[in-house]
Length: 122
Image 1 (cartoon, helix red, strand yellow):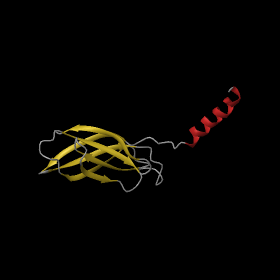
Image 2: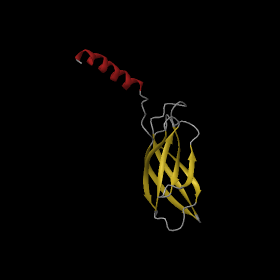
Image 3: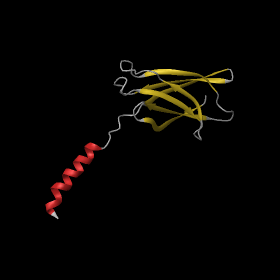
Image 4: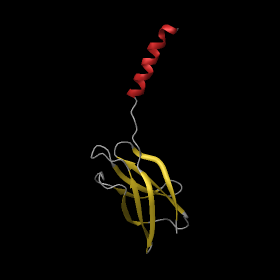
């Protein structure tokens, strides 16, 4: 059995290098909400180690607590030199009775981060 130990070690090392490495997901630094008439303007500040067109934060979305998408803000270019950065989305309709929403960010390489930031409505 000990004769296979070097082969097993080498196989484990190769597997570790062959596994795709997920980069840091976008971080939601801040969320500001402003009611304008019957809808809302949502401003989200993100940070992400954008490297250029090959890897950058490319959007965020507003979700209800049950996961229904209420709004989507697409980011059309990298923000390599502007970190963190804030972008807004106007005209978001938040259903009556909701006390909070969630924000989820994504990048163009790894997709949706899978983590959300919960924000109470003012």
